[in-house]
Image 1 (tube, rainbow, N blue to C red):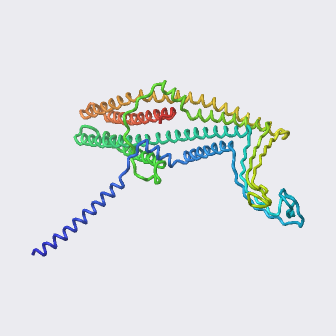
Image 2: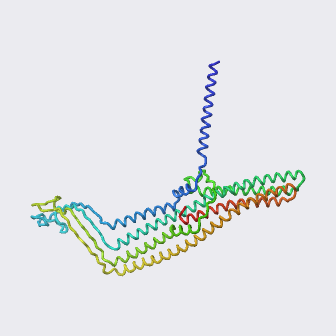
Image 3: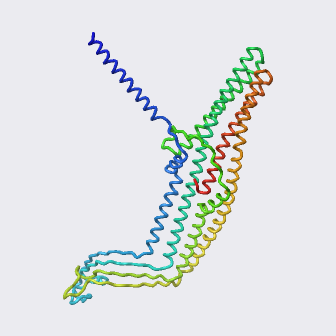
Length: 449
């Protein structure tokens, strides 16, 4: 009996262990598939890694930085270590060839000897206004690329902020409509109950059922809109947009900064102005580079090493093969069929266009600042009114239902009160998102987000 009891205990323990293991795996699977909570900061960071326009702007900025380095490096002397072995067929005669004693003459008169060894370090430097102007132009272009990158970052941030708060808004609306559907179902049950008690006509039941069906359609549309908003944001966040996630619950609205703080930040930290100003500087440098073609160019060369018939420091009879040479070249432009004049005119046209772009950017900044701050201030003032409207509509719905239960109001009044309450809650959700988006747009414009 004890043997069968022990066997039964062992089997029971095995089954329990298998059940525990299955339960553990189920819980682990549930935990793995649980949606992650994405904060706004993390959403912006993820979008910067996945968005194409921002990636192109980042690549252009890095490339412009390399161009700036190359242009500055071109102002410095270059060093080359040149090595060459040259053999030329002799022509049967002899010559001096710069050495002591006679040597075989090469067939080609351009070559110095039958055997020629070259091993020289050469230092070259070109001095001119064009190189300096080109370095300034590349520096300005690099600054413009940095400003364009900041513009792309702020544009992407604005897109993510709008989508992020849209997800929260649609989720809030979905919850509101779910509660509205429950309210419509309760009201339908109330009308049916009163109809059974012969207190109201069947028309009240029909009206309540129509209201309930409308709420069902509204809830379906709200769920569809919420899913669409989630997918649009998920395209920027995940390799697979179907990844489950949720956004953080919106916190209390942040206070609006003063107008003086906004004006100061906008003047000192606006990428559109920096980009336009860098464009003007690059255009001025291009004008200077074009005018540099009127001036002479100076080239310097210093060479040290061996260029002799022997690969050695000394040749026959102790002649010295190792030595140096210095050369200077001055090129003076004389006539190029007015090409330089046309290039100067072309660069001056681009410079004038860049100046117009700069003034337009300044005007656009002023207009955007006025519009964005007014939007944020207005929506901030409306938040308290929206909260009051929700409380008022909720109280109106409660009182209207009580009056209907006491046969003091009609079904149409209840339906109107329900619609007013839903409209107030929907407007409150839209108002919160509107203020958050306006505040974020203001922060983006001033560079604080």
